[in-house]
Amino acid sequence: MFRKILVANRGEIACRIIQAVREMGIPSVAVCSEADSRSLHLLKADEAVMLGPPPPLESYLNIDRIIEAARETGSDAIHPGYGFLSENWRFAARCEQECIAFIGSGSESIRSMGNKIEAREMMRASGVPVIPGMSGAAADLELFRREADSVGYPVLLKAAAGGGGKGMRVVREEAELRDALEGAMRESRSAFGDDSVYLEKYLEQPRHIEFQVSARSSGAIRRSSRRRRRPP
Image (cartoon, rainbow, N blue to C red; front, side):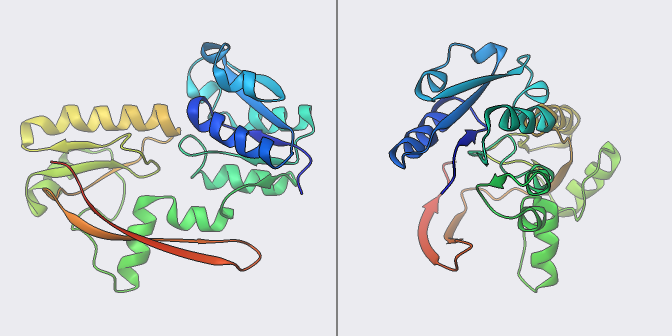
């Protein structure tokens, strides 16, 4: 059982995790930027630590400061929530180095699957069909133009390190590509501290069956599935 858990997130995400931690009888620590100094999650936690200025790179994405906050409060575990550093393998590895439990997948698993480009290439190497697109990140507009011409419009620009729709742009014609690429890189850098972006074919109104597999370090494994149709 953990002595104290630091929740490295904000808002509703943090509130829900803090509630779960409280139900387990474990003290919780909330963190915030200067912009969130009056947020609800701070009131729900047992302790709160100011990380820094409003920009995420100086607060919620600042690995050194979050580790320091865990040390300051005696937290022996960190829950990253989702978004921010939850899929950052370097953060998970740093927690491992500092002997602080990272509540989530191990750093090597995150490194393999957290980066969309690496995950695509891993699946491709295993013979799993993937959507046509780039095999690596780039910033060269001409490269994106050639790739878009190859797979055909519309195309989708995606942040390699991201999720939740951040750093993602649908491009329906070449005239939109430059602004979309700049916007995707800018949003990805702000949200994840990484502006790596790649391109793949955009599928209109796709349907898919999704399997989610979760496993504990103890060996317990659970699988669920759901069918979903994306809105247009």
